[in-house]
Image (cartoon, rainbow, N blue to C red):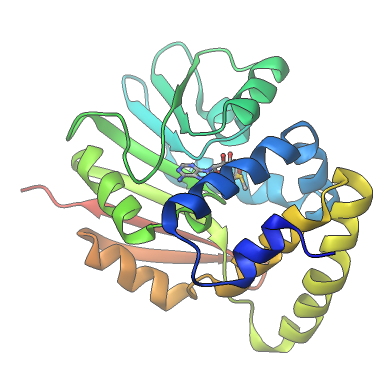
Length: 242
Ligand SMILES: C[S@@+](CC[C@H](N)C(=O)[O-])C[C@H]1O[C@@H](n2cnc3c(N)ncnc32)[C@H](O)[C@@H]1O
């Protein structure tokens, strides 16, 4: 039977606000089992990718750091410490609430969306975003928002699925189209939500396209680092000094 989620992501014609509402619904229904599913789907490798992101961000004492689409707090938790300000900005109260139950000392959770980040211009030193940009209905607007809240000289680091190297692509496609939705049904009991995940990965820009989108949003020195043969990728870009 076709569900509301299948209809949303099978169609390009859904109104952006409706799409936003339905994506929020995806994370409401998967929140409790989200972390477990990540471990199953990636054999735990998502933890190494996130650690790499945190190392690249190299957050320092005194900084204000925003982990956009921070969800249950995997990235924010690693960056948090009493000598800096770490904020998660995410529209999903259930995801942040699961994060708080698991412990998020020295992290402040703020309900907000990437397309309208509730923070002042130039108020942030570092923005990180892990597996979040794909969910933004207006990705260009979200990149501009990240650029807006950064101070001149601040950096944004974005971890996301990307286009794997050609030799592994057939295996990867098979795994993501056959195994992930079944795992979603078995572990998270939400096959539609995980159909959405696979679909959103398939439609996401590749490494060079993402770089161009960041440059169009105003980022400078944009570079990327492939992870696990391009299955995931970290794009980094700076806000110009003047
Ligand atoms: C795949 S999870 C990633 C969570 C976390 N960053 C991680 O890597 O484990 C995607 C997150 O994006 C959030 N999200 C969805 N739409 C969003 C939007 N428009 N703005 C900001 N975050 C959004 C969801 O609520 C969810 O927590």
